Each structure stands twice: as C-alpha cells, then as structure tokens.
Image: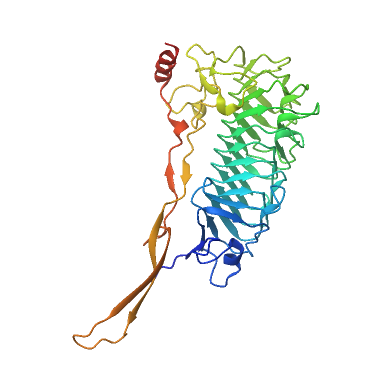
Length: 427
C-alpha cells in the first residue's frame, strides 16, 4: 500500500478561534512543518519581523481586502523578514515592507503591499509577483546566474530594481518615480529578459539621467533583452529632460512600443540595439532609427497625460496608425492571429490576459477521526469522534489550489469587434 501525505492547514486568528494567535507562533511550532499551509483568518493581524525559520510554507489569506497583516511600527517596518526555504504568500494585504534573503523560491500572489521603505528580495533563485499591488520601491537580486524574476499583472507604484536576474516583466502598470536610474532599472546580467505589454507612467523624475526603463551596461550580452508592446508616457509633473529608454549600448530588441509626451525616446543606442516598428508622438526628440517606426498620434480610446493609467483606456481607435503596423514577424502576431498592433493590447499576450489567482473559499474540514472502543463486541456500539476546523478545502489530491479566474480587463474582441465597440460609445 502506498500512502500519500500532504501538508497540514493551520489557522491563525488573533481572536483565539484558530490554532495559533500569530503567524510567527505558527511558524515556530514544531507541529508546523515544511509543506504546510498557514491560513490567516479574515481579520487585522498586528505582527512584524515574521521569520519563516527556513521552513517552506504557504501563508494564505482570504483575500487582500479582508486578511490584513500590519506592522505595529507602521509602513516603514518589515512585516516579513524571510530567510531560506520556499515561501508562498497569497491573498494578504501587508502594511509594512517585505524582506526575503536566500530563499529558493518566493511567490507573492494577490498581495497588496503598502510600504514607505524598500521591499527587497536578495539572493533568491526564483521570485514571482503576480496580480498584486505594491506601493513603495522593490529591489530583486539573484543568488546565481540563471535566477528568474517574474512580475506580471501587477500595479507597481514605486521604482523596481532588478539585478542579475533573467526577468519576465509582463502586463503591469508601472507608475514609479525614477530611482537608481529609472522606474524600471535592470543591471548586471539580465540576458534573455523580456519586458512586454506594460503601461509605464514616467513621472516626477528628478535628475536628467533618469529613465522610465534604464538598462545598465550588461556584461553578458548573448541573448539580449526584448522590449515590446509597451506604452510609455510622461506626466506633466515630469519637467526634466531625460530618456524614456536608456538602452545602455546593449543588445536590445525594441519593437512595437508607443512613446508619447516626453523628451528623448531612446538613448545610448549600441551597434547591436535594434529599434523598429515603434510609434513616437509629441516627444521633443525621438531618435527611432530603424525600419517601420512611425511619428503620429497613436489614437488611444481615452487618454490624458495628466491622469493615472487606471483611469485611461489604451485601446486603439479604428483610425489608429498603430493597428497592424507592428513587427510583421508571426512571433509578434496579435492573439487573433493578425499582424501586431503596437501598444499593450497587441501581441500574443495583451495586458490583462494573465489569469487572476483567487484564494479558495473556506470549508468545514475534518482533520482527525478517532474510534472508541478499538475492539467492538458483537451487537456492540462504536463511537466515532471527529475534530476539524473552518479553512481552505482539502481534497484527496492535497490542499485545493487557488481558483483561477479571468481578469475582467481581459475580455478582448477582434479588431472588427473593437471598431463596433468604439462606434457604440461615440453614439
């Protein structure tokens, strides 16, 4: 007989109805082992400096709107100070920053981080931030060559610095004040990285050398970096002459992007920097030197540069010159198979099409059964005692995975359908 074992689910509630009063108390318990899930009940939990003791655990809430962990010292203090192991945090709001060092894998899904200090992921093999919102700066660095950083479907209100990671930055809204060179800064060896289908509001940069995307000189330039189908625009509050993209003289492939209302589009272009099929509008200087670049109003459905990205609509009007004028290679075709549209709704993975991870609902769960007596005489009676808790559902295949729902913003139509939608809205 082969028996499968799965991690246990432990409930934390500071009102005393769970297994533990605090997350740290749960982690410190010898009963909680690597592979277990610590479920944070809907409530406000006051903790800071939570250490995973190198255990590999899942810390799960009921959603960032109802499960809140707040550092008593305020948003400038750490909620988590993780060291080693693999940790997954899902469906929780944090008031205070996140710190992780030497983790094998750190995953944050459907997490809301409000912090005035730097959240840092240092010397980790894999980091994934998905469907989250972060107010405050983030820095991510690798433990070794080949370490992976994935940030997708998130709202990033502070600068993001990535060092020595192969990064996939996809489908985000980045509105960071330029820090350490840019709202999105990449340094060291980031060979093979992809930055695609992001909206970047370049605002309030305070030095002439800062950029919306800053690519520091890359020592290992074999595969290069691809920047495709991004929209970069500048808030009127940004009154400094700086660059939308600092290419850092790197091997870089810059395709299908829309850049408007800024100063210099791309700077420090190297011999191996390929710039093609981009759109520039209302920039004081834009040196798009390759083929297929256009200089025209991209024609967004609803746009005003002084407004934040979430109040705008970056779909293209039917008359937009950016429709079907992106890179003609089939690698960049739109999701409907037609030629690439410039901007965030073009290409095979338009913004908003990454699935949203939703924490599972709570169910009554039986965690233990006992029989009394063990030996029952004929016509005797047996008593079955069950204990359990209210928490995430568990099945015969282990703890239920979070449900995946489509992002409401991911309802995309064909180009003809988009045209009909625009006409209806104009009537």
